[in-house]
Length: 122
Image (cartoon, rainbow, N blue to C red; front, side, top):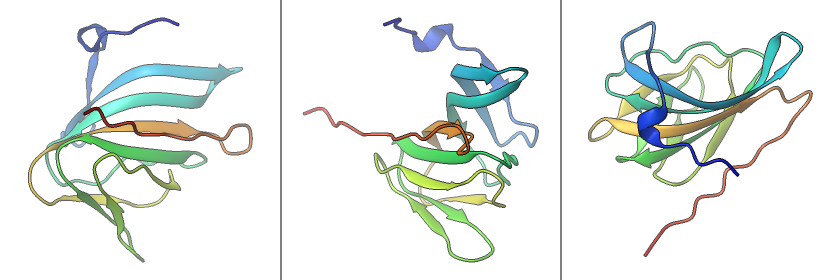
């Protein structure tokens, strides 16, 4: 196992300037990304990027609940409780208290499946 320190990750600003993403790892199949693991700081309410063809598992790891507004039913992203949704879903986050940091696992569901299990420390 390789331990990756947070300070070694590179900050990548979002196109909409609503946050920063740090890529932790990714798997390639030929020339395209088949899965990726990252964490992001969400500081303002702006549309998520389109990741059509991918399944996204988002887990709030720092901060409070974030509401993921969609055209149908909102998705409630509570701290340490992963939520799963289609990466091409039009999502706009609504912060309920303050900026958050989330962990994102995204993968091509035709090739992979994934699970995020949260463990809290005493």
